[in-house]
Image (cartoon, rainbow over all chains, first blue to last red; front, top):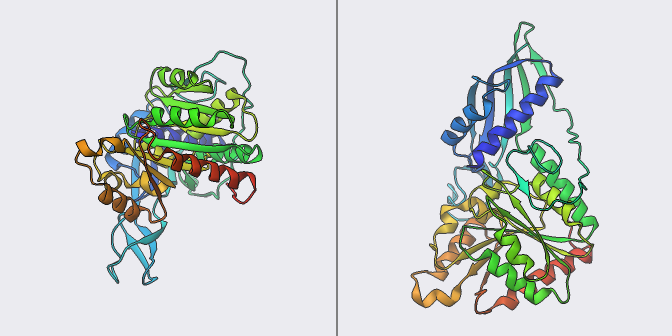
Length: 114
Length: 265
């Protein structure tokens, strides 16, 4: 259940941004999560609601944008997009693919009220 | 609330009652690029900030400190019951005459593992994560300060028994080592790919039990290599001592590399 830590870390960052950017309430938060980040979305939705209670993000809408992973095929050197750690290259059907992107978990944007 | 320094670390407790050594690291984060639209009460703020930026900041601090002090740090990760603590006590028995060793033990509850380690005569500190399913860089940084480590030491961090959650949390360690025992399924690398991708070494433990279980070593190694072609693999039994020297050699070589400055953490 590291999704709870992820939710709590997000809320903590929101509280800091509330001071920096002078807002009192978050109504919507958009996260960008790579498909290889090891995040179970349903668990994150569940944990976010729990973690947001009594915070500036209580009741906020959570949006999660999936980001496909990218990598370079070690055999044909094509850049490919993938959804898993061990999917074969779509061009030459070989393994492995050196993953270059897909583990990110970012707060992308917030909708806030003063 | 963290009981060491009062920082915001929910439900984490650490053994030991001695004075507060903690030098709290103010989290200096570069202000992310921010653009604000609309002047009404409702506005959009674009942030683009890594959710784990704080953990990664603390991990960076740990890594710098350990690199400066030539402390070779290993993050041991496995399912519960794979034999992490036994493996660790066996390593300590082999190393303690020549090397300075420290251990940070992570579990949800109890200080049993730290007590087991201390029986071997080395300094160990238990971190209880409460509801938490993994150690993070902040807790480990605190624990390291409490240990008051001497330079040129080994630091073993035994993570909470869990193959999923610890994978994403950098502690500042030199290497993640994943341990799998032959009483588990050989397909674990495929089932829990993140940790096998993040680890530099896979230890297959309890090989003395191979005649009694249906564990396909070859398949297991092939699956791990499929997820992480660079992963090194050592098959051993901490109980009988078979192949333990391979792990000892791997650790000694890694530490020598760190000390010679060949390896940048």
